[in-house]
Image (cartoon, rainbow over the protein chains, first blue to last red):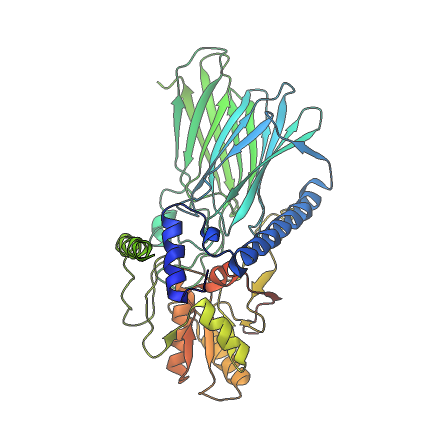
Length: 282
Length: 181
């Protein structure tokens, strides 16, 4: 085939992409090789990064493939980098005592560490996080015998760290610490049920620009969340600047009888917020 | 072949109709969200895309400036929390001046940006400048506009950003941020 004019080849490439056919079949030349080399370079960088993080966070402990023990779901193309939903599903025969969520390419990669207590039903967790640039997200489950299992998902989105929180800081700080609880499903004493908490908190990470003053808004973010049922722990969460604004967390717990679900949230300004909710809702 | 061309053309028309219309150039600097659809033009400067930029850089004597944000470690981050920002890749030879592309910037950053450009260009306002950050990022548009306001006559804005550069398989190198003392 004679070399087509560049503009014409561009058109063909466009058509190929739109029709869902591999562009390479039209331009089997340097473009293909460049893309392959680029993908290989990316893969090598991602692998090197994860190796660095395994060392930094888990001190080089062995991580086994998650299999059915832990699965992570997150959208491959997230619409809003500041609100990327992540769902974790755990089905271990050995109890899971904790879960780590690592957003590899965020500057502060350890986004969350959940530790489960006696009232937890650690089979599902959902939360929303900020993603700064294209990255793998790793979910690591730690079973009660101290073994680590990992599952991963690649997410293509960027800019979550500098994305502004609403239109102005005063509005974002209004109602800080307000919480809502939704019980999902019906209450049966002794049976696991799901709950969703919503916490009003801007979770400023120090990288957002105030839309009015043009300065950087000082970091103020949630450090810990403790959920308990009649004073027995459901989970303790150590979190960080990667949690989204107004965090929403869905978790499982086992109410042995009618009781009180209590939430204690503390932030980096040493503020503490407490709320208690009747279960079932009255 | 003619039929293929017609299909391709139809697809292009359909694509451009479906894509979000570019944002008109703001009067002054852009003060809205940094990430999102950007303008298609820059008054007083030129827009350059990846292929042409690679060719321009081969001819040399171009000053390339990256104005992407740098990650900032919050002072109150837990001590044991790992803080591990990725190495920052730039177009080879580029200088990285985070903060130069805000909608309005503190006087010291403005002064630093101006001085750094003057130093790198040898006080030559005819020095070609290329300014970029990420795709769909207004920081580079603002910084390019600012450089034009300093009097630079050959300012290129590169809206494809680092994502466009890397997608073309072009080389990068790691840079450290340069900020006011």
